[in-house]
Image 1 (cartoon, rainbow, N blue to C red):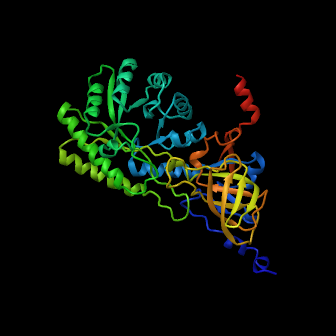
Image 2: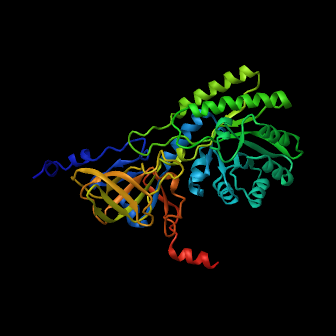
Length: 430
């Protein structure tokens, strides 16, 4: 008889510890190898709603929002809907005092239904359609313009008082072609775009909008952009005697996907860039713009996990391949986090040693991650993949769309129902 058979409680202590930076804030081990999130055993939604299925911890999302609002202040943080937006999650975020960056009329409608105020909404993106622009005009959302031609197009159709943020990028990287959307800071084209906004009868300059990358854990890239942006604000003041109302430093804040990953120190970052902005304003003799940020994945990634059933286990000479019943969410935007998700076996006890395994999605073998799982993992087992909160809106990797479930206080609520094959056929026939 083994020690764990003599002392069943010891099994819990032998499980891998749940990294607080990777798993949802309320995640805890429970008896019989189960995982508690939001007071709910994760085997329950897997049995009730089927797999794959996304679970979002409401308390974690609200805690992340509160962290950002505390660091930057009320009205200074907007959630980037690129990380996924539905009305349920939107209500949590809007109720926490954040605004929202949306990329289409559909996302704008969802944001409004979720309770975001029109004054706190920003339409951004390089592929805005006429319908997208008209939706922003009709509700009073601000619009990001990333080229002189786009400013001209907005000016021709916009109502009086339309707020516009000019998208700018660091000049050095911009000349190298790293940034695909935006005007190089300090360039004549950027100044021409500012002048066009200022001289338009129906446009109002709402600020400068920056976006400098993804999965950034160090402050230096933001600091470089801030210094150059403040210099550009000084040029605008000298040329046009206009104070830039706001400077948005974007998002791209790093998320921890595995033990040892660098995260992002939100409070320290806020203190640092505020101090730099103050010093730059004093140096140039200008009024400080209002500092804002627009994080996306950093708000929801940790809050989410995805439940999968194991379809098949392939034992290879070098490593084990575990095939799941749906695609493994991945960060396709940058190599820094590709394939770095953490996963664990839930729903049964296992005393088998942990070993390195490759998990892949049954629908898309290209999406994979290397994780540590018990050596006795088998078909039918339940696997929880952490850090997937920013991928719950994806549907291209699945046949249909998995359900999205919000958990809080021991209750489960369906945020997005499962999209079945019949739903796809019905949509195709409409």
